Image 1 (cartoon, rainbow, N blue to C red):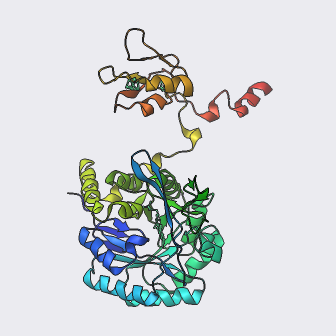
Image 2: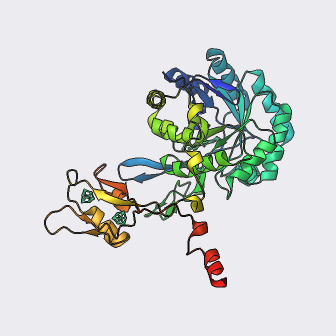
Image 3: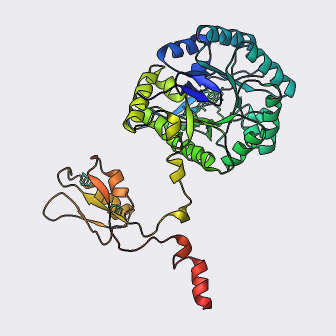
Length: 421
Ligand SMILES: Cc1cc2nc3c(=O)[nH]c(=O)nc-3n(C[C@H](O)[C@H](O)[C@H](O)COP(=O)(O)O)c2cc1C
Ligand code: SF4
Ligand code: SF4
């Protein structure tokens, strides 16, 4: 059976599933319940300068039957005192010495950072996460994403922390940036031991059409919040792969953003993560989701005959290339399995109106016909088809060798070369 025990940048935990910093890690009571349920670690709700919270503070995007496809919050860091949080961290560590307790921190001055690091280390935390990602409220005070968006500041504050911390330090990055690798490299230059991503994405989740007020509503007004949950997973996966593929980046990555199932977790690992953090799915379904997460991931590793997640880490990320490195002569076309087709004709409508007019109505049956010579292999019909595996994309032998954009006749560089001959 695969070994799920984790050593992430020196932080040991029974498995790679950690609660991300947020409401599920508000209190020692919750973190202990989570550890009892099977979580490997917890990143405590961010400790820092004094704040006050508004009400209401959450919003969600529902899609069809899913009440929370995307989640949004305008909550700040912990609104409990530092003393209470530190005391509860100590209690958790005493009761669960083999689980990972990571203190998430956000401060303004070097002295404040150093003071809190000392207090946390005194009660035995296993590591730190620097919150350089919170996109609302705190950034207006020069913290959170204001740090993560400025590589020089990110490097400087990381180096302040490294002067004092004796435990591993993870820098948590903001996705609200054009090039996430710049912030990751800045954290590395500052001496960080790891990075985690993503924090939440700037967003307004919706408008109350009767009141004409954006949500979440605070006395008739609102503010942009941080988006997370299943909707953000594709953005997070891309950013994790960008960092993991960067030739100069050498640190471990903790993957966060929309993880809900073991499949999501496996995807983050394949894109380069070696630990996983989850917030929204726990807020939605509770701590017990970890049972299926662990079992599913362990079975997946067994099915792939690998002993640990580090063996899998990054395997798919290496296959994320620049567009110009893809073979233009590789060709697939759609194929309908007539035994599975229910004749709904959604594929016909999609291809006819939204793609390449490559599906014809069949005069003799409800099963449409793929026009092989016209099909460009875009995938749309297979994506709209409601029956699993009914439309598959099949490879066509073109008899042509590989062709990349650099050599393609339509490339302006090649056209110029031809013209000058
Ligand atoms: C209500 C709420 C509060 C959060 N508070 C914090 C926080 O205090 N510190 C922090 O680093 N991240 C915070 N986050 C961000 C999460 O840790 C995580 O990065 C983000 O939600 C993406 O993961 P998810 O899709 O699993 O929720 C918060 C998220 C939510 C939903
Ligand atoms: S969408 Fe799928 S099920 Fe519907 S007609 Fe097309 S192939 Fe058949
Ligand atoms: S793959 Fe694209 S072009 Fe081909 S039949 Fe389907 S929708 Fe049409």
